[in-house]
Length: 482
Figure 1 (tube, rainbow, N blue to C red):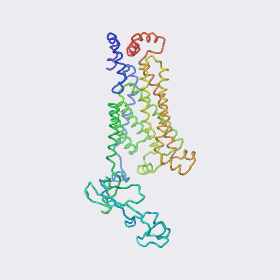
Figure 2: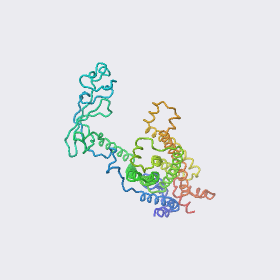
Figure 3: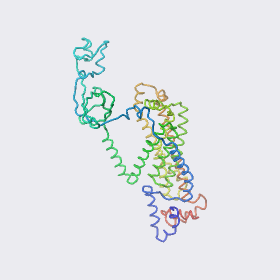
């Protein structure tokens, strides 16, 4: 229907002068913000559909086939990790300073004078030497904090219990602070409640609200669609990708299917159902395939297991059927997807806008101009990707710096080599997406908006020039009529 509406009235703009041509050109410059981009011919829509419809059907089939029934926890519905334990709300009523020895919380350092039975006796001590060493039992006092915690929800609401904070503890309490309390119903009554974490609900919700407000204020309708796409991406991740991996499905297959679903939903929702968006989807798909092939090749070649930290080992211990190496490759693909979307959409938009600015440009000129934009984008995005991985691994890099290990030793150790492979494979796919997406966009926009590159195109171009340089639409209609 769209092609019919735009292809039939080419003769109508001429009697009204040049204004309609300008109106269409201006409308295109804003169309990608609020709706579809300049429509393309029926022939090109069919070509794009032949590629993308089977791909979309395969993604939907993959979602249906791999959709999890639900995670199977290890013991009676609970994993034992602490995240799924029963919790209630709590609040710090007051905080008072006390002598650590009075509450049997003497710090470790002062209580190790060196004698075999140097028990931290509150009154006398273990002799002159022991008492003098480090200000132990009878010397200087170590000050602890005694926080009185009140349970503010659940069946024991109003109940209080003490929490002792050591001088060198990283977590400190203040009166009025909101807490999350762990509840162990089978424990002795005085040990049933303990501090699990700080309640950060309000600051986190406030930050999320500010983020959404800024996105909508700057992006307007596009910002609203971006937030909806973000929610959908998070839903696919939490409802499909993670549970499917826990259920034992191949992590790589799950990541490809889930990542493709996120890509299709996010791109078409944010940028509209148009040929421009479809080209960006194709460029992203080609780049993801390249990342998958390179990642699989080098992860296997470098003999990376993926089991390099406590979290991965714990997951593997609880779910032995999870393929850890596949989990590593899946992380590479999902981590690269967001940056790829940015690059492919930018390159496609650049080609379309350059074409609108100069409808007579040849494919070679259009590709060269778009690649100049892409090279600037590559330089900044690759640096961003590397710094993002370095920032996430900063504690690890600090440990190697403290150990004073050589660069070669550090780089080839599995825990660092894993991050290097992840970064470089993602960066290669990112860089490759620029020429691939640019070439696809140039082929589509040139094939649709100009006659074939031959001698006959000259007459058509000069004839259309008489109607004004800004009236690209009239030239395109007459070119297709020929």
